[in-house]
Structure formats: structure tokens, C-alpha cells
Length: 230
Image (cartoon, rainbow, N blue to C red; front, side, top):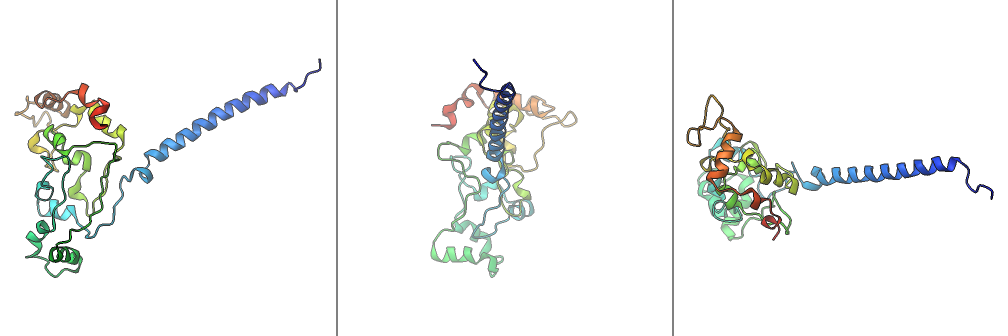
């Protein structure tokens, strides 16, 4: 029986199979890169707001504590946004005629709340509770970044599951004393400056291991899917 295909067909077939595998791998790599990119995650994106509120000015410049505006962050799943009355506590006395604050004055006069655009917005299938993270010693800056250095607020982290799991799998690398949760300038202990209140810890890892026990952090629980997906 005569040969149907030329012997070179074997080489072509092998090259084609290799090429398809390489192409599929390349497509998967590109898709993964796009999925993790700021274009998809919104990381580093500054959103338009009705008033260009500066955390840098209010937190770093004036020393206002996070809880003054985000009143429910320690007791609720939602950090809360301040009502206009909170803004007017100060701005009924200072910058009273500033054009940039006209939306605030209008909101106060009409009783219609300002419509802020959420910067950190998780999908509906993710359950997140601010209060439990604060109770376990997760600092504001750990998730939100150095907000005291943000003239306009942006999303510091990707907020993707892999980012969350970094902390859930190894919480000792991220925890701090509850008293320092709202401190933007807190630094882990060092051999020169040990944390005498928490086992004389001399590093983040030592401190974290101490706090994991003290605050009752259960790795077997916080890595369970049902914790965040309910």
C-alpha cells in the first residue's frame, strides 16, 4: 500500500501539538495577568467623588482618628461613612465659604446625603466584617494602605482572594496590638525596641505568634471557605 502522507508530516504534527500547547499556555498566562492587573482589580484607582476629600490633610495634617468619621468600624461589618453633620461640625466654623465645599453645605441645608463612590468594593458573593478584623488586630493600613498619605483616596490592594489568603494563612505576619490598629505610623518591634506588653517580642513574627494565641485566631477556621463565602 502506498504511503499517504509524506514523512515530514510527523514532524509537522509534533510541531503543531507543541505549538497548540504553547499557545494555550500563553493565552492562560495573558488572561491571568489581565485578571490580576489594576485594569480589572481597580488597584491604585482614584474614583471621582462629590467632594475631593483628602485623608492626608485630615488624618496626617489634623490628626483626626479614623473612628471620628468611620464610627461603626469597631462594631459593624460596615465601616460607615460620615453623615454631613459630621463634616459640618468643623466646616460650619472654618472654610465656610470655600467653593469646593459647596456640595457639603447644600447637603446639610437640604438634608440630602452626599453620594460617595465606594473605593473598596467587594463582590456580592464575599462576606466581609470590619469589626472582627479590628478585634483580631488587623491595622487599617494593612488593607487600606497609608491613607494618611493619600491626597485622594485610592484602592491600596487588589482585594482578590489570593491577597486575602496571604493573611488568613499566615496571620502572624500581619497582626498588631489592638491599641495600634488605627495608628498609621505603627512599626513592628525590634531587638532594640521590644514589645514588653506582648511577650517581649522583638519582631513582627514573634509578636504575631503571641497575638494569634492572645486573640484566639484559629487558622483552621479562617481558611475555611464558608468564612467569606456564605
